Every structure is written in C-alpha cells, then in structure tokens.
Image (tube, rainbow, N blue to C red; front, side, top):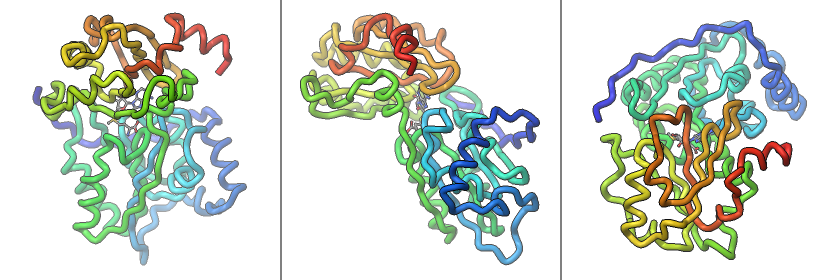
Length: 300
Ligand SMILES: C[S@@+](CC[C@H](N)C(=O)[O-])C[C@H]1O[C@@H](n2cnc3c(N)ncnc32)[C@H](O)[C@@H]1O
C-alpha cells in the first residue's frame, strides 16, 4: 500500500509539565554529566561548535525506563528529532530552548520520508548542533538506525548510539514472562509484520518461525496478524499456541489481550489504536485470559 509523504512537524512548546521529566532530569543531574547550564541554556548553540548526532533509544514509553545516558544526551541537545511513538514526558527532558521536531513514520499513515529525515539530521549537525534523534525502544531494532548511521558517516557527522529497552522487554517485564523460559523455549525471534508494501514480508522463514520451542515477538504486525497466524498454522505451529496482543506497553493507555494463535486469525486490526506488539509461544501460557486485571491486582 503506498504511504503518503508528510513534511516534518515542529512541536510547539507546551506549558504542561507532568513532573515526571523534571524528576528524572533532577536524578540524572545529581549523578553528574549534565550541568544546570547545559540543561537550562536557552540560546541555540552554533558558533565554533562541532555538531553530532545521538541516536537514542527511549524505551517503550515510560520515561523512567530510559538509561541515564539517554536522559543526559536529551538534556544536552540543541535539537530533538523525534519519532511519533515518543511520549511527551520524554520530550519534556529537553532544554527549554531546544527545538523539537516530529519526523514520524507510522505504518500505513502519512509519514516523513526517510531521505528527508536523514537530510535534516545531517544538515542540523553540520551546522554545529547536537542533534538528539529519539526512537522508541532500542534504536537498533526495527528503527532504521542503519540508514541514519550511514547518512551521518557519508556526511562526516559523528554519531553515537544510546541503547534503549525494546518493546519486547517491556512486554516481558509487564507480564512477568521470561521470553526464554527454559521449559518452553530455546530461542526468541523478533519479527516484523510489515514489509515496505505494508503487507506481511514475503520472505519470512516459516519453518523456523513455526518451531514449537521458539518465542516470537512481532513488531508492526497489527494489520497483518491474521495472515501471520494463518501462515504459522499452515507451517505446522499449533493453533492452540498461546498469544498475547499488547497495545501501548508502559503507556497510560496500555492494554493486553490473551488468546490463541487460532484466535489471532480473526484479530480485528481496525479496532486497535496505538502501537501493538504480539507475543507468540508457549512461554505465554502462564498469562491468564484476565491478564489486564492480573496486572492491576499485582499493582505493577
Ligand atoms: C518502528 S518499530 C520500533 C521498535 C523499537 N525500536 C523497539 O525496539 O521497540 C515500531 C513498533 O514497535 C512496537 N512498539 C513500540 N513501542 C511499543 C509499545 N509501547 N507498546 C507496544 N508496541 C510497541 C510496535 O509494534 C510498533 O509498531
């Protein structure tokens, strides 16, 4: 499905302050590495500066799930280029004077073109700015980091990568499910449900994915989940295999649904709003159908 091209969007400064960003910023400042002057200076910093890019993993959504290094880099940046999935609390970590620019790419929706993002990032850094390029989860997993690192390298712009907690590990933590529980799985696979065309990739390793003792974590698979489930069952994975569909992990609108692979064939993708991660495999057999209430009871 062709996806329309969207211009970048500058985010207007907000008066709103949830307090979460301030709390985390204070903690990091106490540890050291970012002085108050760095965090508060308002003027764009250009003269005599050598620009650079920090590709920063911001985790699944909760600002407290970020690394100290990520928080430091955001607090010190001159410009923040952010993906759509980054929470407002994370953007609030930036200095008041740092420009915040949304360069979102959303499957099936109007998206900024990767070439435009690369060009903007390189131009800002070449002008002497420290660019914080924010990505959800970990930048090196389904994050187009390879293309952005190559663009920086081609332009002679220094780039650092700050790892983050990928959505898969957010899911495992929230459900208290080990993705490689040795009774159930000896490997785990991160799978994309979204090829360039918007459909399921046509070169998936069905035999490997259907292996009963492999845990699958499917990213960007909301619309293609029924096809994936049919393909897995066709390749020999049991229709009774436990499945968890997680929406907005570690976010205010987080929700989970436990089902089987057979049920996934009927998943009404249109009804789902927000980022969706799908866990498939016997490791999820401990997740009860009432998973949401389980989490509430545990107070996690
Ligand atoms: C472009 S990929 C980026 C993945 C990211 N680099 C990571 O490591 O989590 C975006 C997809 O990640 C998944 N995702 C990211 N954050 C999520 C969250 N908080 N809850 C559920 N899924 C999430 C969804 O499948 C979403 O469509």
